[in-house]
Image (cartoon, rainbow, N blue to C red; front, top):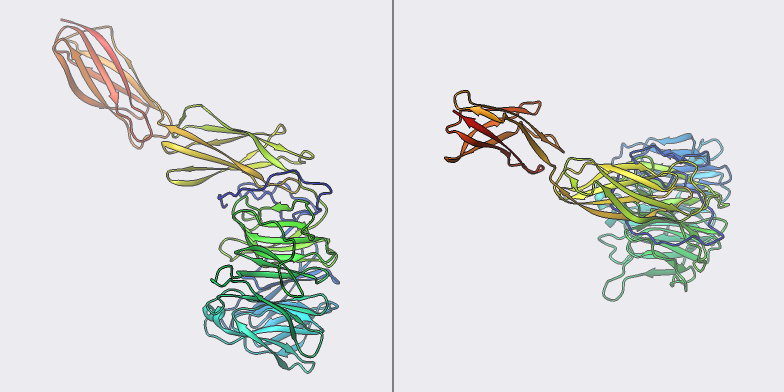
Length: 581
């Protein structure tokens, strides 16, 4: 679980609150099961190790997820098929790798980008309908259906995946006789396509060695010839501000374009000329880099995916109208049950806006999850109040320390106990402590045993749940001292020179166990002066004995001491014996 935390905007949700529910659960605590899971909260672990495309068939209520699996000619392809409840119902496999998905206008045909062609499948039976010729692909394709045609990118064949960002890529389409036709448009890199209302087609260019100033372009696909109606590059005269393209989407009416720019956030553009819209969307939370964007088909919502760590939101659901002041619903993914971030191009809505489908991935990018976000739900603000306290007041290395705080919730009480997560940062780095249950009164206690002397900073986080937004982290720095040690002596009040002095004692060290038995120094002080005696080693049970033949009469004091170590303070004890002849 990633423990880096971000700062989130506070403030009560305005009414009416935006309807949405996170199917995977926003309370992403890896050390405990998802206590918030309910019938409408859906998440599926995808059977893929790479991700190419996500498309939604609203007519048949099916979701298709493609595993790109490019890199080797012998790699097999997979399209996983799910229903709107997140249940996997089928798979489409091919002998060669696949990438890119598109549905025709009535959702009756699924187009799949294959290595040697564009494969077609009946969406009712998943039976193959044939293949449209396409140039050999070794990099991965993007597909879109616009103006009654299937369009696909055709990267120039290369022997190495690492060369794909710099390869020349064509924009092609298939003819009714299953043959290939070049559109005449091309540029460098792994170009991405998106279809929109009014027979529109959009192309976006990721940054690359041959694309220092990437573009977005809109085309009219209604005629026999693909006509570009708008195009834009974003760098200024000094080369700054270039697009870091991740995803793009048309608004429901086609009048606006949203672009997920990992550098600038969410760009909102006018479709007719790709100029900046008069009103844009609020910035993503600090620490979140845009990765995906999607408008709901009913025109109400905008979903923005991001790559973020810890409690920083990875998914925001906002009103599609940027002038609507309703705060976004924010969800943080963080752990092995949810993934860690929204994958690029990993958001798609059902046509009626009733469900959002989100593909998330882990930090390594080799595991994927499908989330179903289904209305309705509301979220309320949360906050930590009163800071953190700790006991005991004098913290010691290796000893139990309780860190206490209070989480305040707006809205109704949760149906199941919430949990907070905690980390400790000290000289050796940041360490996960685990989770603590929030009691009905909002209080919680995090238990820890700091293992280093010095400053330890405790950070407590609440990542949110279905009805509660994440809270801004609360932090407290604690000074951790050495654990105490003690020596006790049992000595006779009087002893003779002839018989000698016999003293017993016990040694104890709190906190962490000593790596080896303690060795105690012994001094004797009498009227002739002070001198060191042989040291004594403490037994496994903490006891030791001291025997001495005094050298003179009268009071003799025996002092036993231990110097301490990196984690324990030293200790000293003394006993005085009256020595007779």
